[in-house]
Image (cartoon, rainbow, N blue to C red):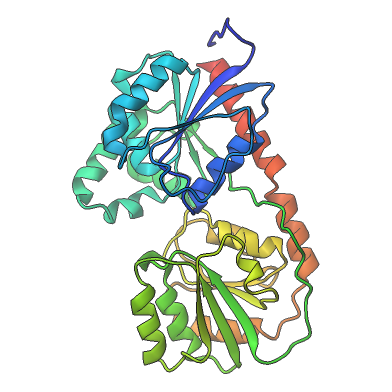
Length: 366
């Protein structure tokens, strides 16, 4: 059992690459803003907060911005801060940051408990690295140095057990929490055109191109709004023109409140090739919006119950996706049930209870 004679509080240090727009950052913010200040003395270390999208509103949390361009250049700064803060627990929150802590674990006092929050499906994410073989080898050698690893989904946990031989006892599953919506989207009568929405970073893994190709095959008149920005913006706009969908597709850019852009969407569409645990699906369902998405690797099928809160289709099957969109457009989904089930299952209180129980458990058993 760890001892903290200076205070009854457990000293927790959380490290995150940035507070830019993203699911990882949003969940770190959720922990910081809702942590029990009577039990935990929390410090948030941000590697680079040059372009913040989120803001810590819990004034009891100490925020330190290192202003480093990348994680590699922050190693000794983090070491210095840990030496000054003397935390009982360190929570690392991103795959590349996790690996850095694992590699340099020898630099830190042995009494500190290191916990990793994994935000990706590691074996898949590794393939996208510049040096995938080396990155994978380092993960296999070093990841077991963590005292505990938190996964967002069952799929993510099994990926770590199978490919990286992490002992199951050193892992936990804590889903992402959904923030209570600011408003309720009233179900409307079926009307034409139907309104579809996607909120995503415009990058390859999000599969927006597959959604566009599938929509070309649908028979239901629609208006489709894509909210987000990213490196594929230009090519996706060109694809829309090539598919002759430009009159039906709007690229709205990134917005902090996407459902103020489209106030009454009928369906949320997701084309991702893989997902850790999709925040955007939780947010859509928390507003009562049904979803259509591919049953891709990750936590998607842990969120979507076909026929209840949306429809799942086989990965990369564009014909099936198109048929599902047409079908879902005419189903009278019980939106209030979708919302209540989502808010009950993924509430901030429920997930914070799990985080705090985990922190207390590893603190008292190590």
